[in-house]
Length: 323
Ligand code: NAD
Image (cartoon, rainbow, N blue to C red; front, side, top):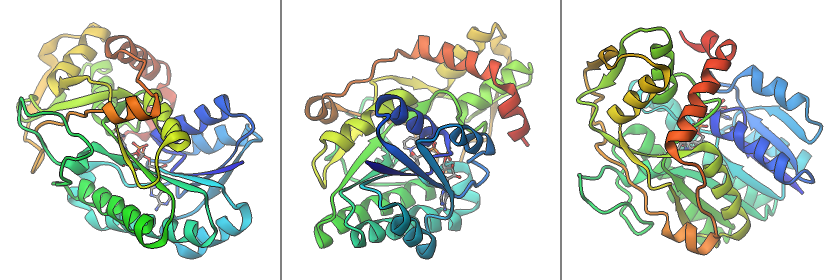
């Protein structure tokens, strides 16, 4: 079985490729990745050591490159991670988000349709549901899609395209919408690696606004296992929320990191808030738990401590990436 993984050199994709190769060594993985700033050469060198992984550098929004890849490798299934993923960047440079996240998804769906691909799994995000008030019930799959940032709007557009290819062309597409991930190989622009970096350097830790915004955290390997479960057992056309019932304020997370590293809370430095900053995300993953037989296994306190340790041990990877 050949599995195409787009965006496999990024944070979640890299973890996912390793997970697939460890759990399903009979599966050949073809990785398509443009190697933007977020996809690193380290990942390519890592894949080169595994004969079961083929790395192709290319743009998911380039129909010629994607057609060539499908013709050459004939993937039975596709897991689609490739995206621009950083909300702050989507505010300053939205057009690349539309190109990769929207056009790229359309190009991929069309190639999958033409080549009779058995199943496409769209890796989406809880951010498509918008923002919750304190005390409001968690997002379910029936919650309205109300994105509020250029990033989440582009992901929502991609989700809608997936539904269009299901209903119009009968393509088998399953969508997962996951909450905020943490773990190894996350690019050092996202909250947790940024705070680890600053804390290690005893530099001020920049926290947006009041730091009271709430995110729902899940370890990346639990997310990868949810994707695998949806790929195997999901219903075509269905959406599955993935989350670990782990709401924390940003301030809670930052304080935890400082405590793990033995640094004082006085390093916290509040900075001007992100424009349109979503207040709270919370995911109800009941459908995935009941239909897919999946449940997250890692507990934040332990898994965050392991993640901090990982960043301490892998400074040779992330320090050169920090501008
Ligand atoms: P990331 O930014 O770390 O990785 C994205 C990867 O996509 C990089 O390797 C990059 O080189 C590649 N890429 C970008 N543009 C491309 C293009 N035009 N063609 C081919 N490859 C391209 O992102 P991530 O955090 O690993 O997220 C992966 C996916 O998971 C995204 O679709 C994101 O929306 C989704 N997601 C992320 C989270 C999270 O917390 N990080 C949560 C839910 C969903």
